[in-house]
Length: 340
Ligand SMILES: [Zn+2]
Image (cartoon, rainbow, N blue to C red; front, side, top):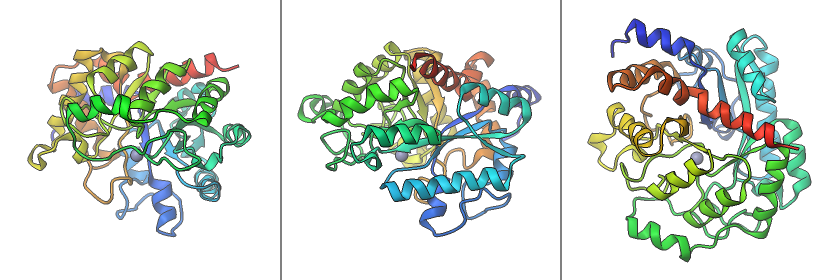
């Protein structure tokens, strides 16, 4: 795709915050260095491609399993900052993200994708906050004894009737889930509802007194998958000031492999903007977390093609700026403002 001067200028101006990245855990799972080196063709993310795409910050997944794994992943995050201090820094406050934009560094925002590592301990949650966790996914779908919700999240295509039934058939938050969310609010950790099932989604969004994110997942009306938000979930997200990060995972973009395209991804973005407005749209690419499939767009280096596609579709520049990072920055700022 040819990128116009208008698209490039706009893209370079934007604060770009990727709402979900699994690269560190993917390196860890392969038993390799957890560094975002300049040239890593066997991964979807490396320093060169992040730079080419103008990335300002990423929600970097540093925990989805047990406590040992979390600590190891934290070592990986810090190793990047120690090895490449001119390129990476750890984000503690929203102002740090703006500093990254001004200074030309890439911010790493610690994100949990499941809270089972907490072992039902708010003390552990508080230590995680001190280490830099600023976004916490309640679940990766599991409903283990230490989980924050009571029913395992389904993961497949489904019908609207399945979704409606889930509201009452599923068990929402566990007692620990009901304790953890207020504590996240108090600390200024953003609650992330990606991978929650329908019952826990609605219960958590009601309970959180700060805006939530749905960091990576798409729109059910465009692609009927359990991991995509239904219309009433979008309305609840709007009413609580949250944002959805559309994911670049082909199976969440369309059920038909022929229609898993950049243009179809823009349909999801367009749907959100039409239905609830452009204050609630963002992205969470999920690079290195999609089992080796080619993402749409394939890497951070290709993000300008999405700016071009959105301009071609007629989105105003202000909407594109909110999509790339403005909305996530607003939510991180709100979470900090509401923290005690
Ligand atoms: Zn995920």
